[in-house]
Length: 197
Image 1: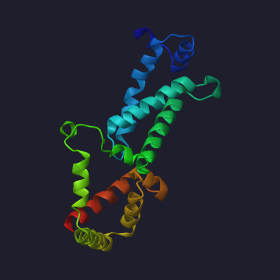
Image 2: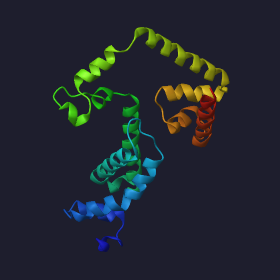
Image 3: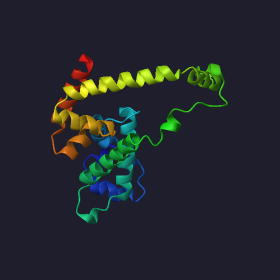
Image 4: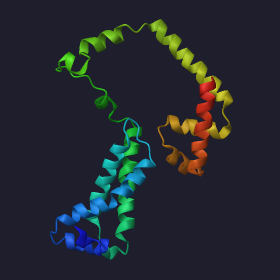
């Protein structure tokens, strides 16, 4: 693989189309630090950084497959764009909670000792929910939200509303025309105020 170090990415892509299969591994390894860097800058609801890295590697793979040097864009910029788009798509999909039923399923067929919970246990737990208790809990949460809303600044309220929509702090920054750091600072202030309440 060391003989590829002297070649540009564009040359390697051209050679890869000539069926040099080790080039794919070389390019994937070369760009993995970029994928990690981009993954660390995002947050995936219900997932972790490894999930985002996997999505980024899928984007990189697509970039290698689809790159066209005649379009006057360097492979680096094209790959970065593909990686980021793949990750943003994953973050948006997670925010929509489209797959929530699949992620929180209970098998009808599993041995209860295998995963610690049988279907009957889940149903029994749901049956134990007291309607009075549910109303009290809901009122308590609403009171805390009302108290928090009184403490928040105008910016913090806007950020909070966007967070409830499932947006990441980078997406919120983009929509509000603010820097990601300003949004992150607002989130930290909100957390502190919520802890006081």
